[in-house]
Image (cartoon, rainbow, N blue to C red):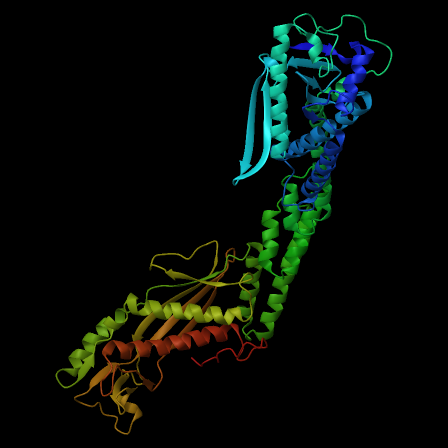
Length: 589
């Protein structure tokens, strides 16, 4: 049966004999022992503390200056508390063992001493007879090689005793001794003579007639050697470590988050970093907000872009008014510089210059919505009538190509888009896109109106027959080489040739209206353009003649070329000072 007895209640002679046995001095000596010496535990404690300090320091410093990583959340708290708990448990266990060594005259541990299993890990000794236990002995091997032998004794009341022995011959010797002891106890029980066990029984003299240990009931003997209990705070190292980690873990977590807050703010040197800090920081919010607005404006100015400054005004709507004023002043400087650059290459037309000044003022006030260019469908009413008249006059003698079918929306649209593209290139040499840009607004229906919230250039035009001063229509015909087109009057023979395809000359009257919202009077221009005296048309192959559509398309394209040139000349001088190339020459009407 299991017996519990306090070490200090044992007789002095028993205490001294037990002390000698745990120190492997005198007789009896333990058959098996698992001693709780502090040396190994202290080494583990040192390693655990070093690992914990290194890990905690790495975690502490990792990302501490980054404003993009927020404070540690609950997972960080759990991880830090776990690190503290692990290290604290090993340290408290080591301290407990060191105190046990200093407060107990015997070596704490678990012993198989004679016929008794003794749990001596505290002053309260637990003694279990070997005969009352179920032994389990296992020889352990790894890859076929012997490693150790484990001994496990399990009393009916629980609380197993475990030991380990190596090498193999030592383990075999222990097994033999255990068998001898078991046989000796069996013999003693038969003959009833306890003196036979006295030589191996450390508790000799404290047995009853059946050989059971009887715990003394007298008070502890005040005469040394005596054992003292470990302080209750260290009696359970795991519990003490749990309490310590519950206090230190959240404390370190809180201090790390404060340190991160300070360091992240100090290292935030751009508006992006400050914006990230403002997403989670708490200790420097007011100062960070002020620096964020200031740096955002500085970065917008360094970008040397109206768009960047407008983005600042849009995204930083809560910025101090003085910073907004600075941004607007910087935007105005861009527009003032653009206007001066335009004046350096502007035409001598005062009305057009005044229009551009009003246009830039509007673009500045309305965040540069852009100048929209739109065309109305061409008016070709005269062409149909002229085709009929010419056909009637020509009769069967001449072969005229009809003119009206060649000026549909499908053929005029690409030429209109090309004009917008070329004008955009010309304006782009003077104005940046975020100051003024042109946009193709597509076709306007005959009844449609241009937008009222955008500056616009509206182009309407009429395609009509091209007449000489004497009122006769200009007729083109193909000459040698076959793809050269010229009017018959340009050659030696003024008579119309028979047997050749003839083409009616055209002229285009352009009405251009330039508007700025809020202005009562738009700027208007009227341009009349004709095709050149001679022009060339590409053919699809050697010896083939161009079709009617190609000839009229080139004829109208040459007229549109003059429109583009005259529009450019209306805004710009013949040469510019931008270094980007000369503006088109102004052609006489």
